[in-house]
Length: 372
Image 1 (cartoon, helix red, strand yellow):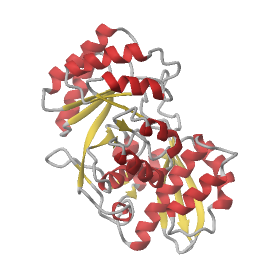
Image 2 (cartoon, rainbow, N blue to C red):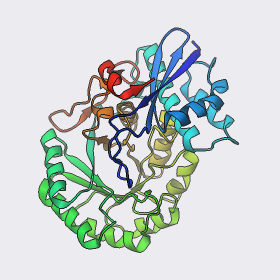
Image 3 (cartoon, one colour):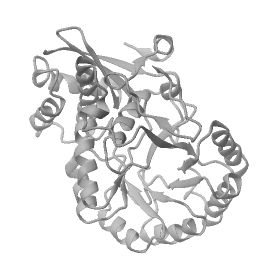
């Protein structure tokens, strides 16, 4: 069975606020779906976190290393594309495009064999994974309302991130965290994402250390992106003194970018985004590399329902997996596929058991949000 064609689908019209300055335009186009078709008519579905123009441009480079290849060898085909792009795109949007293609190839392979991707990745260590609701910080009153919404949906873990945290004052930072803990109680896990990958992040190690101590006072599980993404030594020094777990990695691509964080044990948690970092193939390599160094992989999930399905498959196939990110109230996640993701009575998401990723595109949602 050979790879015969690739199609792209741009998502827009319901893009959620992503936390960056000026990031509230619902028509901005960040997520692009890819469909990979075999010569036997089987379709695999993937997702790239980059614009359609950049995906289509990357495909001009990648097609010669994709079309005609085996549709049943995602790791080999994806690595072949990556190595062939040595001079043209070691990371960035080319790698984001390879990520979506790789996810689609795993989906296609699973459909061809009538097996879930989680089993093809090595087998299921678990049938469900605990999701954390992923929301943005806001004024204390509004934040409390947002937290109540997540509790009402059944979430038992919630991550808050970005503005205004770290952008106004230490006093407000603590008020936000204090408000959150008092709102959810002691039994709900709270995580904090400073958003250090924002343009011109102003804080360094001293701020991160002091903030980590404050977060520890409120029982926060982890402190995410406290520093700019490439400050490996800063993260290492932060981890030495932090009373809470240190996490980062959502903007990094390729396993080589993560190696310094892992080999120096600079973090407790790495957070590769499978729609950016190289897909499921690269994600699995990272997960085992991290596991061998006592570091946990928690996939970054600020993308689409296809990304969530891939995260669940990878998390099921790893010996240790505690959480998966779930951005709430976002149509690209909540409406885009069938069956929709639903929390069970314990606040967990079930790992899909159908062939491939175990999901299909919702045609009605595509009619609202997709441009082919």
